Amino acid sequence: MPKVEELTVAGFQPFGTFLNPNNCGDPAGSKDDPVLFFPDRVLMQFSASNYIAMNPLVIKPRPFVITHAEIHERTEEVFGGFTKDVVFHVGESGSKTPPDDYKVFCLPAGWWVRIKRGVWHHGPYVLGEEPTTGMVVLPPHTYTNDCYVVVLEKPISIQL
Image 1: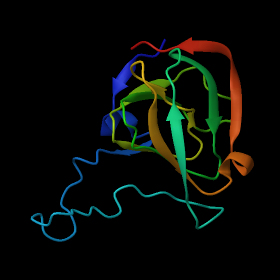
Image 2: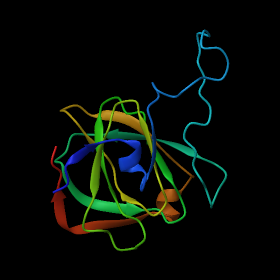
Image 3: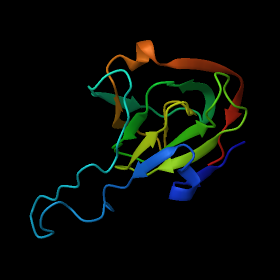
Image 4: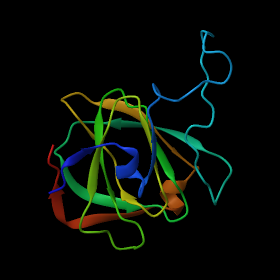
């Protein structure tokens, strides 16, 4: 049973990168400006398109049990900006067969995460009793041409 881990650079490195929008380093321009702009903090690689699609995602409360996993073989995925904290699972890349073990990380509200291509994952789980809204960034139509979803034979409980 995987236990939720804190999202750290070292712990998440095999799976991708993440962004805390409140800790982005120095902005472009002056720190005294009323609008602070932090360019190019999360980069994605696309092999099939030079377009990105911003896809709203609403996560309703549900049991903390991993029942599905998916991979994108040619595409990275970025998600985040949620209004509440969420937890999400990732599994080792390198196979069209989902792994038996997953790591689970807590993504604080407002943060963003980049999932490398080939890393097993699926939709996050909201913490608390209220739905949350965020975004998924992918090339258009990834869900139809580069998304391999598997229902796990044995559900895996998440330990909070």
